Every structure is written in C-alpha cells, then in structure tokens.
Image 1 (cartoon, helix red, strand yellow):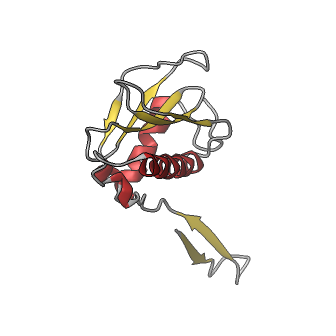
Image 2 (cartoon, rainbow, N blue to C red; image 1 turned 90 degrees about the vertical axis):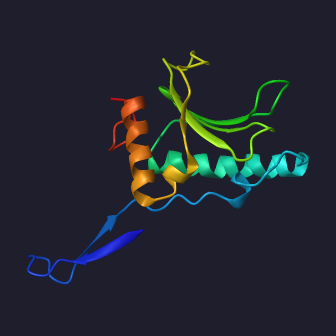
Amino acid sequence: MARVFSLAGHPRKGMSRLVFEASIMKFPKLFYADRRSAGAGASAALQQQATRVLRRVAHDLRLRSHEIVVQPSRRNLPTRVSLRTESLFVDVLHEPCQKQVALSFRTRRGRSDQTGGGENYVPLEQIESTRGYQSFLDGLRLAGGIDTSSGDRR
C-alpha cells in the first residue's frame, strides 16, 4: 500500500512523495483446507501457492540473491517449499496428517549448510495482520542478519 503526501510549504511545491507501507499477507484458502484425502492436483496447487507466498516474502525483504526450492513429500517427510538465502531458510511445510500448512524459518551458515538450525514455527494467523507480517519480516531480518536497505547480509 502506498500513501501520497503533499509537500505543502516545501521549496518544491506541488510535488508529492510516496511512502510505502507493509501490507497484509493474505494466504490462499488452500493453506487452511483439510487435505488429508487430497490428490496430486491439490498438492501441485499447494506448491504453486507456497512458491507465490515465498516470492512475496523475498520481495518484501528486498533479497537480491535467493532461490526457491520445492521438495516433494517422502515417506516420513512433509512437502517442503523453501526460500533459501545465504543465512536463512523460510519454509512452507505440509504434512498429509495436518489440516493446515505450517510456516517456519531457521538460520544457516552459508550455502553449504543444507540443514540449518532448529525450526521456528510461525502461526499463519499471526502473519495475517499488517503488524504481525511486519514483525515477522523484522524477525527474519534480525535472524538472518539481512540489511534493510539492500537485502544483503550485514
């Protein structure tokens, strides 16, 4: 969301400036649906929507270098769509026995660290508000050591 402010009384009268604010993160209804009996089509749609959400997070963090990786579910492992940076993993997880997806993040030590630290789960309800989403982004910046101006590491 952008707000336009008039610069009345400023040497450049008639000019306006734009200030961007964090907006609400809206999750697709598919994230809340019960998918215990869902098929391959629902899994593909979930992966597509999770990729879209992680692209938005990467954009809002102003990340220059990142990758989004989809790992399909295996025997005891959930489907995982990951946003990977030099210092951080942000994952959207879906286990068939869960009703809704889970969002988590963890730190890592460089590109060679494929496991990272412990999972930090974030409830979707917490991120849906403007304030909650902004604090989530601030937490990711702090955990990953991400510079707010460029998206690079500090």
